[in-house]
Length: 140
Image (cartoon, rainbow, N blue to C red):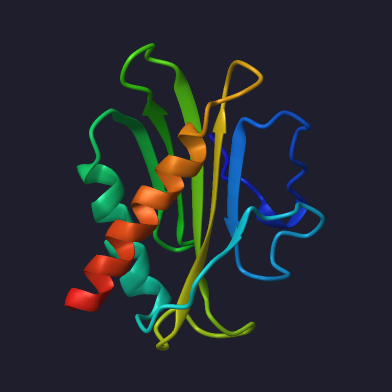
């Protein structure tokens, strides 16, 4: 399984995806929301994101690359058990920044495998993860 390249991402016309991205990072793909900046280093933020993802119910097939700061997993919807693919890339907050330096951000792309509309499931998934992440970073 390969990790998503956010720089060349092309989104479908259907409304069954959600993209959170730092401004200017996702190439031609228009983000649904702009990613915040975190005080943690990219490595620390990656570890936190990985822990939060693995603690979620109905998460399957988690693939992670600590060197690339990339995560890919499958989220299974609760009622109909649809499988949605989620890719996360943690980045230095400043272009050219280092993985151990303070300041990080991330890109998240959640998309449904089937159907035209997801009834907001992908947006809700990304929003929930971001709320947990912001709460966890405030507690550290």
